[in-house]
Image 1 (cartoon, rainbow, N blue to C red):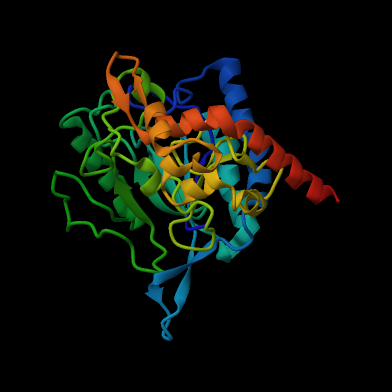
Image 2: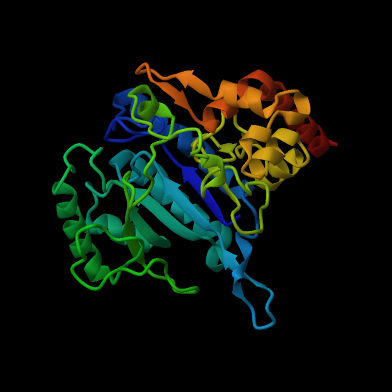
Length: 359
């Protein structure tokens, strides 16, 4: 895969109004133990069921003969908030150590997402010493309470000051406030081991202009995508998810091992990495019209082979949102088609995979 987005835990210290999943929230006492244990129970099996070769062929970085070079997979570890005490020590750090045990020097480039507001130098040292290449501060917007307006820039300054002793270099789009040193580069050079850090958030110049029709963003009427906003064809959408080993291939994983073709997540998982290899799951979906349509970034075509015209898909994509607005987006049509047609298909495909493995 070019990239894998793995949510290790739903535990978070925030309940942001724009979050794409309302499971990301504070948990206390037994509920906190339970949500951390969900990730603890599955992370080793997930790691074992990821590809042996964590890389892809990148034509943008050609070899001397012009053929694509092999580049490392980017493994994005996220929450929730991975730096919360029970998550960090019981799940996050053990997962980093298990990744190193599994692949050693052949491992993926690890990127970690954190809000940054509870980040400490000890956390930075703990991540870098366990192989993290990039630390992404994902709260540079006005949706994170306490970081609105100019306050977000104070966080930038604090993080930059903490990163300096570790020699971490800033990459990515930067921010609307000029960095204290030189402007950051867009991406690290090939083969540069870092460490790096970057900032992003839910605003047009740092992440996406449109909020996804998911989770609390949906319930709070904050999604401002329209029908022409095809998240499926964007990075972290479904496009190319089947094409592991090649550019653009990415999947998303939940704490229990459920795997999805996109970060927005379809109405049902494709399978579980707690019980099966990722490549086996993806190979079993090749040739299925609906999943090939997602792989092409064309969700309107999901149901053409089963009698759902493009017009029917568009109709299913338009609803009244929780705030009473007329709202249309292809993700909603995908949800409707999954609910109407794909649950039973996925069940049968899984049963076939397991039977072949047992034979």
